[in-house]
Image 1 (cartoon, helix red, strand yellow):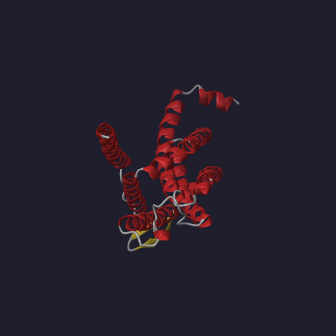
Image 2: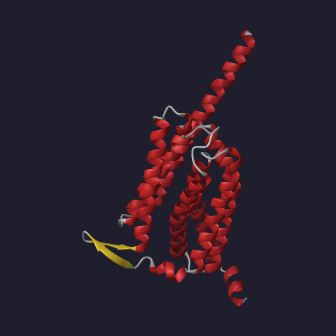
Image 3: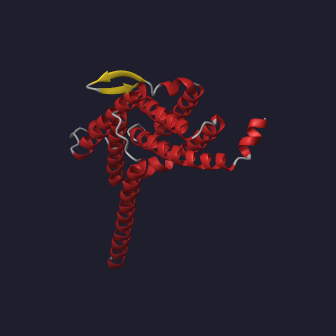
Length: 255
């Protein structure tokens, strides 16, 4: 009790909590972006359930990893040397996750740009399923694990207080839960946003691989580029909406 009282009265702890929540929410949105794109390929009645399962798994994995925090910290210890470079389990996990994300995003972009003639292969045709429920959950679990490890290691690097980590993780998962359906619906209704989101996933995948090889990429640059691209796309959406309304108004007047 004395520990919690001292923690609550420490201004530095509140600053650490606010900073950690910001970082965790950003990582959580990356996680949610993948979940949204993947679940949009399921039958419509299965999508909300798959999103809830994906987010629940993200929470469970983060809390389990947090309970094993001393083991997680050991993931940064060297375990293998290849081509003169020392790799830890964290590096291996990040490289594997980044490569999977690159493969998945590239595959989705290929199908989006050059879809097969059969309706079952129309990856972004939301009127029909193009992915089994179990397959979607398995892929979500794989990426949840990667993002969870990154999330916990980020938390460990920013604070030594476990209660602060737990609060930041719970807030992040709540934000993911609240944003899951609106984000997925928005992505589904705007095909150009789908391509932009896949581009983001490619960038995130490359960042994970680079981090795994020991090349630190400042996340501020990554998210600034993503925010700029999202802002441009938002302007395009507004412009298209205005043109569509103007065309409807013109047709109504001429009719």
